Length: 411
Image (cartoon, rainbow, N blue to C red; front, side, top):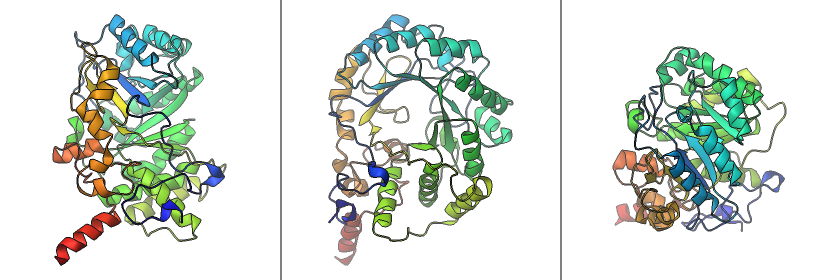
């Protein structure tokens, strides 16, 4: 029997899982995840001119004098490049990465070492076609912009400045014209989720290669926004899987998307209908059909999500060199000015604990999808104060957890 049909707490094994075109349902990291991350995000500066409502950081208008210098940044890149291949993917973010005058030099240095460097700047007057051409010439391959609404009213309210929506649309054209692969990042909350189908259409029309969706973590300034309920998150993630044949989909702080990919393939493989979904799912589906048609004109194979989580294949380095499991999980684990990044990632007790999902608390610890999902550790921490707690935003009830609760109530 395929392990996709397991109903106990044993980990789901994808080796025998059927998949369209023989593609894996969920991609797993082939190297030792305890020794080397898959991706490293470096916040090259905290400086930013925007005041985004959902930002994890308290951005500032001028660079912190303690931020990593050019030499320290290059030393960090040396260390990342010293990993055996495949080396970690590297993303320069902020704040606004374009606030660093030495950014092109850092990109050029990193790519010269053989690192795959992407950029995630803010859309401000600093972004010009000339600067984008310089970053592309330095070796940058992909660049992202944020778009948090299908209308100027919604997006500009998120970003804190009028005109940001139009500037973002213009910047997207500049980015693709410069030869970058364009990724569009969008945050979903109760306040903008009904614009998601229109936002999807906009992203496709922009020529983006990936729609990177972020289900709000109530931390930083984002704590003031209203996050989706667990059932609404399930509706949204199922909808995202539906539209993944239109554009590559990637989710942040929503690892349950991996479980949903498996559950849906499980049902398809045995000819079962998908479980009924809620009102939000039906709205998103109907609106998508109205805007884009019932089916993709040129369907693409859905992009299998990657089984990476905070501290488990993922690491974040802030502007002053402090290392965290994620930018949304503010548990300090070391500083690259005083200790090697390699040691912090490998040896930090917090990182090590995050790589043992079977020891998580509550239903996450007994879930058969623990090694592939593990819940959002950032959300668990933001809502409970415990980064090993069960993710309160997950609606799924593992059979082992249901059996335990049933036994306790019977006893």
